[in-house]
Amino acid sequence: MNKELIKSISDTFIGLRPLIVSQMMKPLKEIEKCSFPPGYINVMHCLILKGQEPISMTDLSIAASIAKPNLTIIVDRLMEEGYVERSTDMNDRRIVNISLTKDGSDFLVKQKKDFIKFMEDRISDLEEDDLVKLKNALEDIAEVLRKMGIKDGK
Image 1: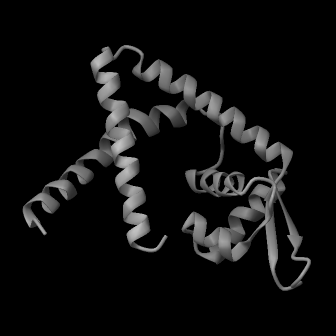
Image 2: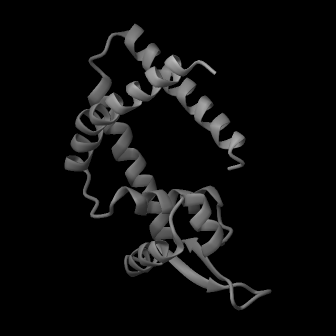
């Protein structure tokens, strides 16, 4: 294990966070008409990945990396908005399942369209070679992060 390389990667990650916040997250938050924190959207994305199948609160907690008590608050708020619904498991009434509603799915579709428009506006002035570098870098990061998740058993 190359400790210098790992330290350099750590330093880069630390420096990357403020750049992502200032160049991407802050401007995106200003244009979004969303009153939800990112964790709420993350929960909805975990649900949409399951398709039409409900997911238990326990499994959703694991998938979203959110503690169950915190997840309950998020699910309550998303239910108030009509974006998710609770149901009791057919085989075990102690299990509470969560599923995305049509309104929740529509909300995510609109969020995605807004994000794509935001990205088009944000990066359209970049040169072609910078766009290719960015695309490749993001694909490489995603691949490595997936490997880290597999290694950790997630």
